[in-house]
Image (cartoon, rainbow over all chains, first blue to last red; front, side, top):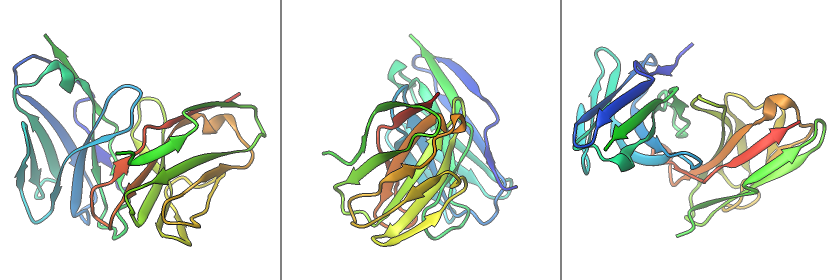
Length: 113
Length: 112
């Protein structure tokens, strides 16, 4: 069935490096994508979102890139800090009008000092 | 800012028991959701509501019930707890469809 998946389940980087977390989606009807950060024992925290009429969106230290041709989404974190260590999920709405999200499995990002 | 508040934080249930997970939001959001997250997995939608008095099934609704009598509250009911319902439950809300969804801190449920 339709799904959202991640290429890399774990990612380890050094403090100060840039991190790139990738996500593949298969539902071509999806028009809204979100990246969430989840720290241990906490709920998902919104990082950044992007709509299908855009291919790039920037936030504070984060950038999301959307390639609709190959159904690929990525999250770039600049100057990664130890506080960025968490599980990162991409989610897509499948084109639904009610904001229902389908989540990927998640990527564990570990930042070493 | 309270945001989305869930109770209880932790609960252990015996097989066959029932319980209600409470969820309330103070952002006047129309849309509310219940997700479950199994270990090492992403979140799966159980039920959602687009407004008071309106609820609908998500991806994994079996074994659960919800109600939405007010804009603020969206309780999740487990009638006959089963070990397969051991999970972390997240309530969430959004102002309108396609808008940012805000999550609560989660409720850890163990069924033994």
